[in-house]
Image 1 (cartoon, rainbow over the protein chains, first blue to last red):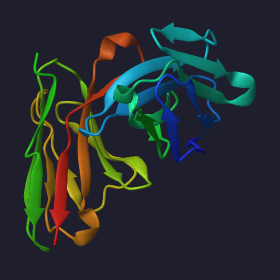
Image 2: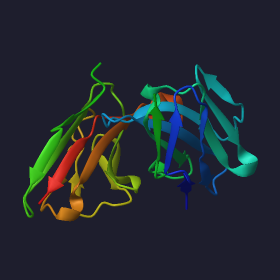
Image 3: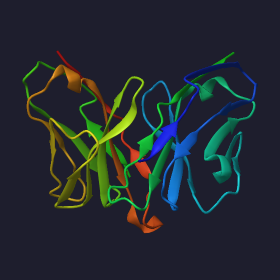
Length: 116
Length: 115
């Protein structure tokens, strides 16, 4: 069975602080894909990044960066110099190519509040 | 492209009523799915489809039916609504050319309240 754990239920920071959102996953598959989605207060789900299990390179996109470590089964997300617009619920998700339904297994989400 | 669209945005039902949540995409995506989001639960897969005429159950299918007569549309039917089906429903679709596992793009969601 697959599982995604986001241990941080809520995080509150002051604008311009750096913040890291943790994601730990469990899967028996050797080929799998990890995702981060953002859900702003408006409610939609916005795709941020996809990473496959064979690519452990960290990725940076503007103020966002992702640290994928297979050794610790983690896929953490860092926002540098946070802004009020970053306030949202962030979901980490996992899927594998071994199953037939390509189901996304979601963590329960981390609510990030960035205060001015 | 409009992407993934869902209607209605909000709906109130009484217990026992039926309704259909609509989902459409104009990106020629093969894979479509329905998730429900409940507080503290993340998102859970209800039903999914890998192409027109093909549907299958996800993690929490009870109380819901789906069909996929066209590539574009994937409606979700509640035959007899129950308060436990109060939730936010998201439709998602994926394009197949990325390989065996696809990035899923979500619609704006339908908020359903069953009284």
